Amino acid sequence: MSLIKYLYIKILSSFFICLLSCLTIFYIFSLIGNLGENLPFTSILFLSFLNSVQILTYVPSVVILLSLILFINFLRTKNELIVIKEYLSNNKVLLAFVPLAFIFTIVEIY
Image 1: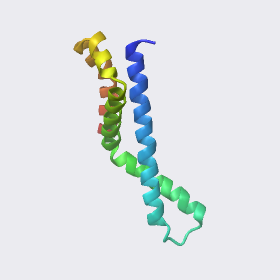
Image 2: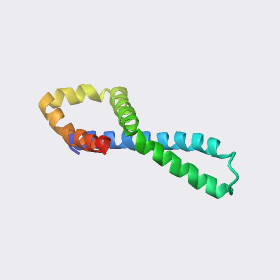
Image 3: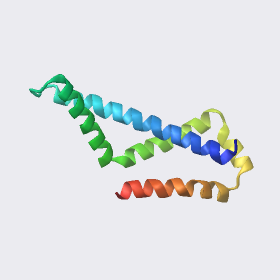
């Protein structure tokens, strides 16, 4: 497996971990807020899920920032930053992350 592909897998896994954890946290707080409503419990569960997804659409930069922090933490724990620095030049690393930065920019704009 190439080094760039490995980096993409690591950053996408950290993104999905952060997305899932933020969705879970927002779901729990939304569920606590909606328990006082006079609705059936299944409707409250569905409404809480919709509220948590809506919160994620309002603040996608939080998920992106947390995923980058988690990604760097993943790389530091196994000293993989040293290996990446050894084998790849700064220009190659920047070119590898330009598509991800472009995608995150488009998500943040819309």
